[in-house]
Length: 293
Image (tube, rainbow, N blue to C red; front, side, top):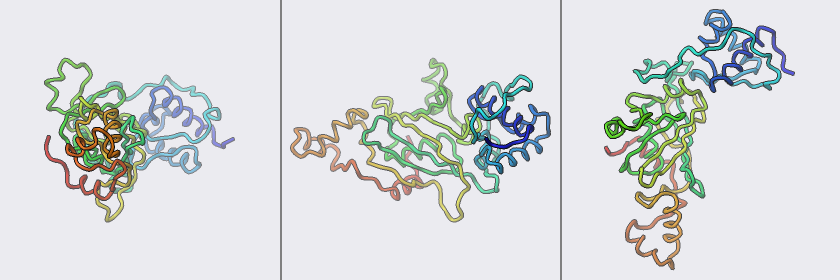
């Protein structure tokens, strides 16, 4: 059984109860208010719990507390009723350089794995970027995957859809759609925690659905240029091919010279190697940026 003092157990009880109740860990200010101590005291206790390997946190990421011991070993929370400091999230100007900075004073770097859903074999990329807006994240996804930014797109996080501000007039009758102007990665991490998962749809006709998972938040490395693509697998499908199922038919035809549609598809798009992928080229595209939509 893990060893901790009754006071440490009280902190753990609150963190567990809050996380189970709201689906994300508490902020340190909420911990301090619930326990009845000053914010510096709560911060010091978090460091103590980390040293004892009872919890872990990601540097520079709010609400990233993760309990490392069995839940059954933690006492039940017996304090006052747990409430959240922020009950309704609204879009506003992001705090200046706070959520996007690591504790060491270096810029935080967000590592994402992007997977094209229902692709078989999987088409995926792993990228790193500093804190950017969703508008810029869209460009990085496009560049890393190999898309051409020729169609509309949208993000979805925890049931909320974030769309290009230029599409808001068309979406006025679509309850729940929010424009993502000014919204940053750090804002979403602050709201939804360090295990952030983002849905990204590109081309509402072919409906290319991507899963974008935040894998890690680290300090930037001296001398390293961001954004960059670390690795990945397989080539991006051609545009306007008919989604993942049309792409499967396309690959079957383009890789078989005897297929009845092989020559026609070859004339349409040229040679295509479905296994081709170059992380260096993807990084170059990410740094260069995309043409405007």
